[in-house]
Amino acid sequence: DAGITQSPRYKITETGRQVTLMCHQTWSHSYMFWYRQDLGHGLRLIYYSAAADITDKGEVPDGYVVSRSKTENFPLTLESATRSQTSVYFCASRPLLGSESHTQYFGPGTRLTVL
Amino acid sequence: AQSVSQHNHHVILSEAASLELGCNYSYGGTVNLFWYVQYPGQHLQLLLKYFSGDPLVKGIKGFEAEFIKSKFSFNLRKPSVQWSDTAEYFCAVNARTDSSYKLIFGSGTRLLVRP
Image 1 (cartoon, each protein chain N blue to C red):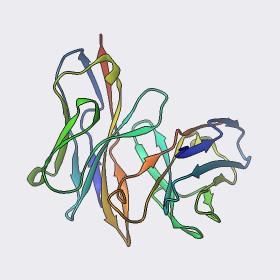
Image 2 (cartoon, each protein chain N blue to C red):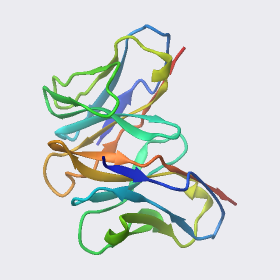
Image 3 (tube, rainbow over the protein chains, first blue to last red):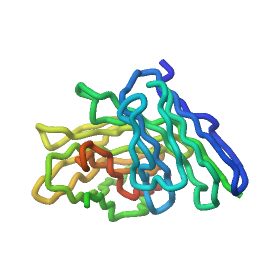
Image 4 (cartoon, one colour):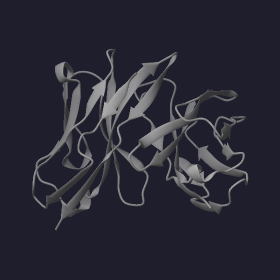
């Protein structure tokens, strides 16, 4: 049971470059989320998706683009990376229904550095 | 707007000391409450959660939390900490925003347990 995986785990890029962070889950969870974690801010929601082809903005969406063509994948793209996007990015998922529908499960994170 | 406050940003304890981490939230509706733990270099793991019923919730690794509705609090406790409890702890509230539920995190508490 692979659960939820993220790739790459570490990424260094330069200002202005496009970067895509991958997230894959094997549970067929309806909901998927992208968060960024910064010191003093906890986790802040960037985007989320309720199902394939349904996405919505979170608290800090500017500079990011997401897509959800398949239920199991939820890539996050930084179209033109900036230094302020240096952060640790976590993907999470949860089911739509059932006793676990309010519990999110997190991936291992991607540490992104923008030079 | 909904928010979660963790008043202790850094806590340092000796092994066997008792732990209590504060968490207060602002949300007037029905809440689901969570504590997540992030060990150094790892992803977030669910420690415990409260949905309904007994306000004293027991989680993994000897942790427990008490939901006090009148105080809008969900404090995390452990009677005797171990060195391996060194980690960052996040309180989170699943609150209804717009047309969906979102997980709102506190800024985290870094716990250092000295052997």
